Length: 139
Image (tube, rainbow, N blue to C red; front, side, top):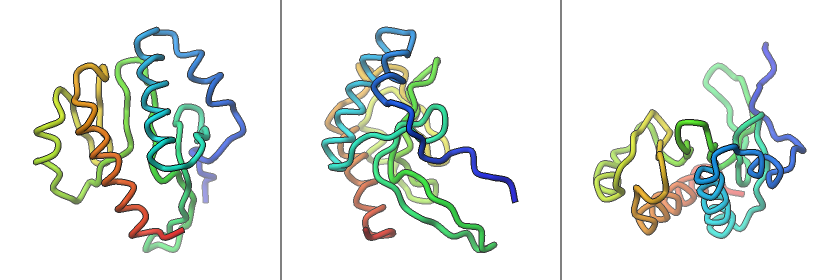
């Protein structure tokens, strides 16, 4: 079995964020990092080369393969912020309709700039993801 690429590392989150070349994206990353740390009560940690995660959980697929991943996280990519806060199988259209300008993937929320979204609604989405993770994977 191949080794998982996305695992916790000892890379400094502060150094990673400081190296984000775009000043606006760097400021957004700092704001998201502070918000997620406040809401989770967990310190940020690098997962793989580009994900900033908070907390962790162990999972097991039906195949028996197991792994560990951050409970929530984000990545300040070149084109946009990617927030790992959605559930691919849950209807979240009501809250997403209130968010503002964004795109979604199966479990990802893509935001160009934090100024494009309602900060209170974003926090609501993050809080809901934390609650779902706490229910599914109690500490």
